[in-house]
Image 1: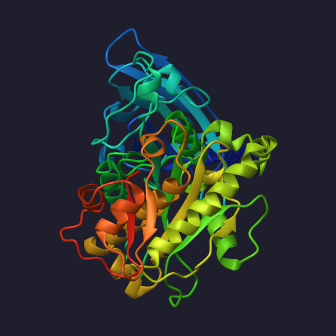
Image 2 (image 1 turned 180 degrees about the vertical axis):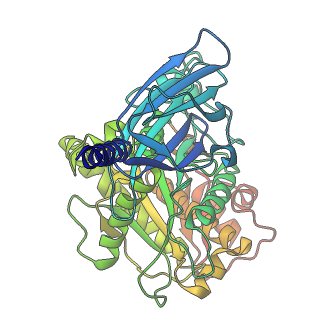
Length: 455
């Protein structure tokens, strides 16, 4: 009887110990970006945790206690990237069923720590975002990320005169989709959408920055993830006149190919391709991990708040008009899957202050188009077409106070019998000015050629 009682006691003790330590840390990932470093713990179930910081003794440390959790990954094999975390290791836990993780830091950072539940094949996660300054944290003013070749406009600069304001450049925010743990769509040969769109975005920024009337800022400058709400917020902090989000399309079969341009709709997309795009955006947030302020929203809370402002209707109309210009330019260099702007409910397009569009540069799921998208020549052609479409739009609708508005050009389509001298006389300018503006090497014109005529 005593032996049976002892055996039962041992059984229940073992069972209780296993139940207490039922959770497990299966992987640890680190994702640095210019304004923060993200550390993600992949767990088998929802975490129970507490944390504290140690700043009195160097190095500075953030310590996380995972209750009832075992470590199932080798931290010594973790590739540390970025400038904020120098080491991730274990330390003596507070009890035998817990795991204590220590993040050794290069300084004091603002930590935003939150849980993300499972979704499909994605497990529970604990996410730690380390921000350089308190005002970089979600809900505050975040630091801007810009193209390295682009001078930044500091808020500390002295106020500009009316003449200076009249000469500002058109500002375009370029958003390379996906990034970090979110690869986007993956081509048949393993090409990641996030890599292709970043190359096209960089090429687009270079072309725009070569235009004396325009300047470009990259929302994502490297391989890291940026939440959709934060992408919009960064563009608004830049006071951008336009937001262009660059993506590569994908479908469930390899046949579809060609580009398309998407603008915001207040309703769920009615086409299969539109629904796939909306679903992909939501899945991106799950892969990349979302900020705490985002996950506390209801399904359409962010959209609902944006639509309260009636300016959204104007922004949507401007986005559609600009999308038509980009499509017209893209048609000259690549096949188009859709020749009219398409509508979808996409969080990245929800600024009421910015003309916004999402450009799909082709189907990465199509084997032939995947190869084309990897071509530097094609990437440059697509980038130049997007630039030309955006510029055509701003030539018709120049923002107040920009150099384009003060030096507005006239777009003239050459007709039979017209010459440079005839056009110069008609518009009150010179042959030299027309040639310089259009980079013409000779006086020869062709019927149907479009020329920018200096006012």
